[in-house]
Image 1 (tube, one colour):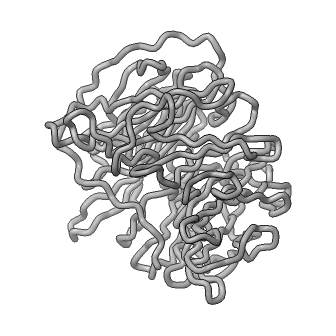
Image 2: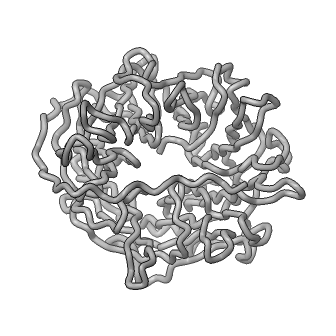
Length: 483
């Protein structure tokens, strides 16, 4: 059984973006939240999981943080939840993507959930975002942010929100949102701060031109050393042969954010997929962020998969520096490349051992373990002077001592990944999603939590979460995770 792939969105709608300022939000009275995903302000990050369904559409599960990582307090959100706008309808895609930030500068992080296929009035697949506001008790009521792009007609929405990320893109100190759109805008910038009545400081188009198909992969991070957040957009374009060519488009944060600053060609054998395949981290600790791209489903290499890294420089991607490539045949990396391993099907960047170098977790959802096909594994590549290396790399699976469960066919361990410091010890911890069946015909999914340590990722104190352990009346738990 092949790992699931996220379908590419339809061709862009033929509508021009007219960038008109909207309501300006009032000045905030509190300092913004210190952590972008601390919804109740207790100083610990909260874990957001998007996998699962509520009736005919999606739901989001939040596990609130403690000093030892995500704990046992759980909140489930969907469009039937009190205070959440809208209604549960078939295939709205509520929870397709999510990101977190303190959008109204009240000291509590907020959750942004996309529903790209939502109809708005008579306009089909208009899409939209739901902002669920944080507070002393955690996440509360929500506000809808609709697409600012005028619809072409009642049958042509712009699928607003196939992906969404947050950052201070214009460098003014407020959190903004970058959102994909199936219009000629390509990606829309919504400018903060935001209000609970739906106000914002304005919006802008990033100009489109991200390929033949609308972009559906975004990653935000610090690439250049200034205070503003930078953005990479992954898109595909037709070449003379008629094939699709993968490209990463770079927008540098600041006053010129809407102008494209650089463009990278990425080797592509026709196996592009959505999901957690982009990450930014400073792998060589030179103060410039580096871009990693997971290429797990490359048809040209038997879908063995690999990861490519473009190192950063003072003005963005350092194109004078050759892209690095890592596979399971790279010296020091455990295992070996085999057909349909899908190495790079998910990736995440974080400093797992606290040495100041970002490290990279790489999922291989199709890895076979003995006779168990697609059991899955995760390999952690360590950053160091000169960049990522296979030296010291370690692999983890449900065969690893301390990891809950046992390898089974189609578990897909590592299908989704999230690196963040949940225990507040200066080291990134790793959340890993797996498709494991829980002994019941209709109950699936384990999310593993492995802590960072001075020697790297450890299974000491490892946790696992399921619909059973969290006492949820649902059938499925897991990633992807909010970014």
